[in-house]
Length: 593
Image (tube, rainbow, N blue to C red; front, side, top):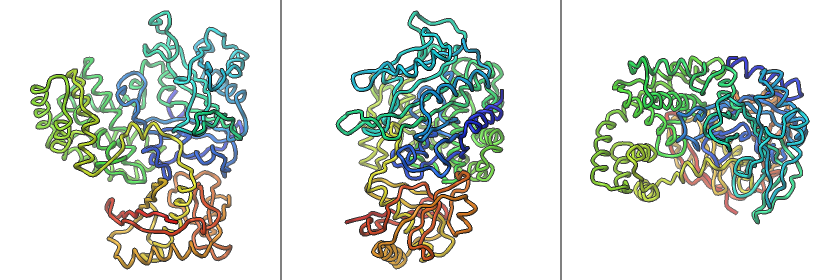
């Protein structure tokens, strides 16, 4: 079964079960400072998992594009990827374990035609903080899965969340397909790295809230959050041994081999080919996103640059000396452009950014590798922080690349020392991509809610001061500040900044009501609501109006959350205005009591 047919069947199956199909959200979380990228289908749904009504109802389903770097060191094995598509169905306080598990079983067996004997499942074994999930085990047994194919695992395997220190969480049940390989040992089972059991689906039952004291209390709204990997599942459906043998990777891998002049790759070449295919696919989707991320020195740009440069280094290992990334990008765009129109729309930007980054890095790659060899000769077992920083500053080697190179020579890198040196010299703190990716649920505190509402007032104020061409290009909100990106081709004057700030504070002082309504996108536009990210909206949307009916200052399509009245905001202060890309400016602002 091909990818498109598989996704279509999944969406139609759950649509028949009363789920509304919602579109894939942007790879760049709009209002979630805890993550750099959308790592799962649940990320854009955080406010609704926490109780805010969703305009489409309590049952949702979609195919979401995702980026994860937590397992980036495993890329090249049979199943781990940086970019992937995740199918998900959600219950927002509606159905529970019985329906979720029974529908999972029905879809796997009746729709995808997996044999019941191939299916192995895991359930939560329980501990001192939360009881064992006997309910899920009984449901599986009632479906005909015998006890010997139900595995009881602990929190690290079968308990999702919370994403941070506190928040919604709960036990999960994972589904694995037995590939038919012989077990590697007597203890071999789901979760074993030998490849016998291939994980394809996870049903999470969010029934607890972990408090700051570490206690698990029952949630008022219990949610079902599921995730089914497209690439992993079609690997099993197409009878392949790993994700790289499927139809979504074969054209890309074929092109890499052609460029490198490889006819029959060896083991080492195979790993480099897979890394190039994975990393450049991820880079294409990041560049193709409407948020227009450029390779850079922090946050998403830093990850993007690292992916491109690692792919180039592995191209160098294969003997590719000329620029090649744009040729691979063309293959990726061709495979996915029908489903993700932004790739075709932003094709020129994707190709140009890859060409620029490759030209920039290729000029220093060979010299950097020679310097690394010199460093290794003088070091014993460890690459010092000053040497790692030299490779970064003089040759453009991300620390992850230096770590990979060092690992190939059985050496360690002083990563902590590098980070301190990095911050001290660059005055940049990206806080570690690993730390950010371990988070998940957005900060929905009072502070971020206030700042979220302030972005709406700021956007309209900018349109009044600078002109109607102003469009939001993205935002990022933490508890301390808001960051608002908008379309404008020149630096704001001091007078324009002061006037914008004055308008925002004037609207705050007027104590204007904030109202939420649900309607179709067409109805929202007829009523004058602004909507800047067309591709991410479903049949119904939430519209937030600021001001009395008929006299609204701002009206926008948005997922929330927001305050009920502008008087809750406090005083608004713009602290910085700067350029972030061609034709895009950025404002950083705070609210003070």
